[in-house]
Length: 346
Ligand SMILES: Cc1ncc(COP(=O)(O)O)c(C=O)c1O
Image (tube, rainbow, N blue to C red; front, side):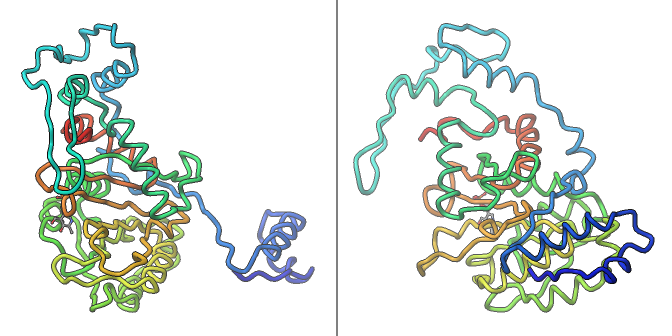
């Protein structure tokens, strides 16, 4: 970041028609000048601006809150409120799963009882905390250290990444909204987007993914006034499959990701990083993700175990700013309720 110390005359000019005092501005400019050259500011995001009225109206489902409370209670507590069946009466008792390389996985009686019971909507606590550590070690997102309202990194388990994507789209899209799409793209995404009635703007790509110049050209439709006034015509998000894009196979270069992230900051849009092929990269080190660059809390990342463990077990996870992930969890509470407990424990 560049800054210079303003002289008295320049300050007087800036103060014309302005209510700020000279000393406040002087302090600000001195502070700017003392920042290291690569210093970047974290400007608080206004997440409510991105949400649909339906998403903003979601409230916690009482039955789900009860289930989560029950799971924190001693086993002696018998609650009739949550509708949880007596796990002693479930017919499946134990299981052993032989795996290709390594020792078999044993699921004993106690674990089986838990695996067959209702669980928390965001995911079982052990898996959630493991996934948060996993994301921190893989991506080291700046948001991991932010406060909850400032876009702190949050994670939730989803029934495959498709569930996460669909719920994110439903959280963000009003009919007529502009959205940017790395074209051509995965038909499952198009099928989820089209019925929502958004205006899809295709961003051209080549073998290195989205072409930043082409994106810049598209974005030049909107003025700085539009950005300042939070015009509802601004694109709400850019959707991209950064590694091994389905169907093109292209991967977005790191340099391009950096340029695209800066454009997202300038035009204040979110980035949806759908990355089910992340773990199948041929070259090490693995490409830095948008999540790893996310100083603002504007990236929602979908990960999937479908391509490496099983697609039939249906497990994936969402990572993004807490105010948005919390909205998705409220949607999960009233739809699937949670991803299969058995799958999560297994
Ligand atoms: C780009 C992309 N996103 C999402 C999905 C859905 O994956 P999941 O099985 O995790 O729901 C797929 C599946 O092929 C995909 O190619």
